[in-house]
Length: 116
Image (spheres, rainbow, N blue to C red):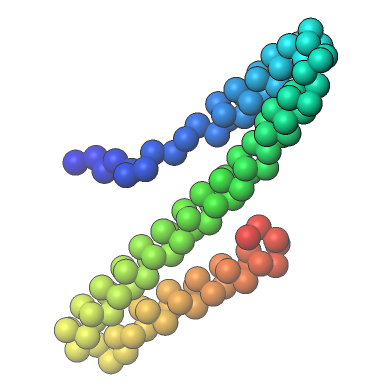
C-alpha cells in the first residue's frame, strides 16, 4: 500500500513563478494608473515578501526531512536494541549508542559546513 503524505507539499516553484508573473502584470497596471501609486506600493511590498517565505519553507522542509530520517534511524536502532536484549547479547545498547554517535557526527558536519 502506498503511503500518502498527510500534508502534500505546495508547489514552491509554481508559487515563485506566479509571484513573478503577478509583479510583471502589476508593473504594467501601475504604469497605466500612476494616481494609485500608494496602492501599488502596498501590493508590490506584499509580493516582495514571497521569495523570502518560499526560501524559509524550503529550508524548513529540508530540516523536517532530516529530522524524520533521524527519527526513523533511531526507531530502527531501538528495535535492534530490544531484539539484541531478547537474544541475550552482551551489549544490546550498542545499536542506540552507534546511531546517536552517527547522528552527532552528521550534525557536527552540517554545522561545520553551514548547511543547517
